[in-house]
Amino acid sequence: MSVLDSIIEGVREDLAARRVSLSQILEKVESAPPVIEVNFPLDRTSVIAEVKRKSPSKGDLAQIPEPAKLATSYQEAGAAAISVLTEARRFGGSLADFDMVRSETTLPMLRKDFMVDEYQFYEARAHGADLVLLIVAALSKSQLKDYYDLAKELGMNALIEVHTNLELEDAMSIDPQIVGVNSRNLKSLEVDPKVFQELIPQIPKEISRVAESGIASRADVELAEQAGANVILVGEALVKSGDPARSLAHLIGK
Image (cartoon, rainbow, N blue to C red; front, top):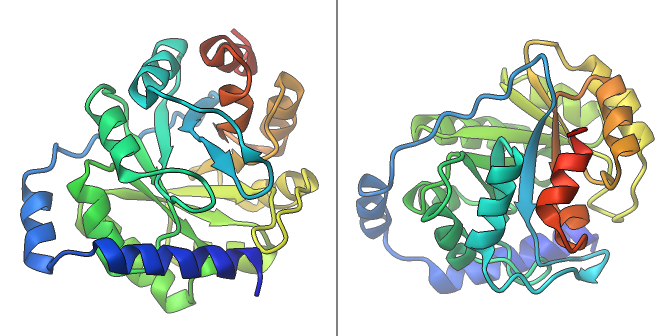
């Protein structure tokens, strides 16, 4: 079993334990805060700054006793959106973290999780998500389209994540607005920055192009920009830095 398969197995088990009826979750969707439009300018680099406690490859990263305070510092430092991990077993995230951040930030929020069940999309919107993650490697081609359509139906947008040429082909088949290239292979956890150079130039310029994983320095950002990225998603480098706001500003050249 690959790392990705193992994570998804845990996600399904945890989802089964907290699932409520569709009528209950739809009631929460109705009372959720309005969707905040996600808009990444194509002519400059934007940052999706992440609240990230741990990872499968590095273990514990940071305690983060006040996720809302961290997100506020990201917003003040110039982040364009906030990502919050909600997967518990490997990333130490939770919907409680998401709720705390949602109550404080006015930025669009990405629910960062392994979305493998329709229920999770209703759940994401019920908690105020504006953006969800769709990992092409975790979904069939029909699931990718159906889940993308569902996210849009609920008013959210989706970050479509790819790691290979074949995954990029599948991503482009659903006419996405935001495509992320993850330099980390989720099946082995190995990082290869060359994936940015290989895949990002193939994404049409009218689509937001997100560089994910392996972003730890200004030089890393510049390499992603040279490949054509106009958005970077970064978490580990920020939460481990001791001064996340200053680190974020440095990454974007401020």
